[in-house]
Length: 367
Image 1 (spheres, one colour):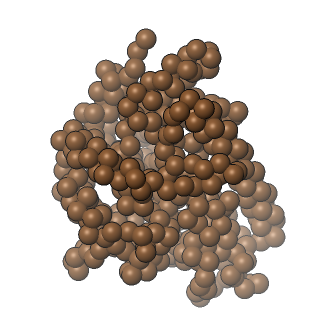
Image 2: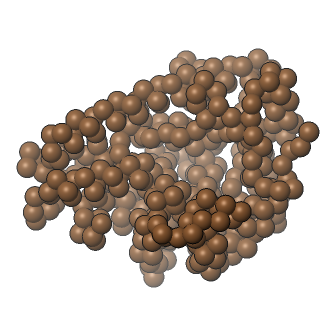
Image 3: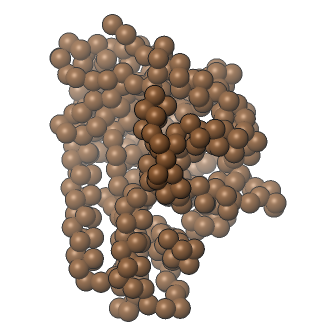
């Protein structure tokens, strides 16, 4: 997609995300233009956000009627899926609570609640974080119930529950440097009395304290950027978290956390992008970034990468080595990203492949 159409896409993204603004264009968009915008929105799993921008367009700016109808059907499917997801979250949490176990809901619907239209955020799976022995208790229960599941890389397991993908995690943050584990455990303990209650179908679900939820989502984004990339949905997520929690965040604390876990330089670039490309107000950022920061390169990586890097058009004809990744040219991309992120998050760039391989081959739970 040409740069001009990319700028229009970002305009629509901002309008839909913040539910305000006008589309400024110097020509009418063709059916082909709208088809590209629609497909790109799907690639980045922000079709719900872009759809919400349509009500702010004038008659001549709207996409063709057939595409609007097709889009509306897709939005209805997203809404239905989110309702089903909420039922499963509520049902599972009640089952866990009966065992005296109260996991934390990560990302997903907790983040969606920060959107103006939560039901239009495209959701993936349900992510639960279990403390210490609770993870193994629930894993054992799945075995006893003969419920199929897979132990996966990243110290996690996954399975389907009533048709919805679910993941259980031992680690709260996607930080791979082992030198940071103790500090992360300490801040988790320090904030254990600041859990938030999130109501899902009349069931109170535990969410992290605002600062830690932001750290969790931010480190998740970085993990995927270091590997194969990430799309605009997760970038919208962090923007909405900042806007929603602006009066609840301790900015100095958040800055200190990012500094101590070694990713502050990268976070500053992310903040520059959020303000300049996603429309987050500078006053909603928890701390300032240096004046010489540039985020154009990060925007380019996000733009090409799409949802978890599966749609990167720069590598569409690349070879797939399943021993490395299902992504085309997996080795080349990992090496490029290692060099790209080493100056901004050095320990994460170094330890990501090491810990990923360990968790994949040696760190899995085995019976």
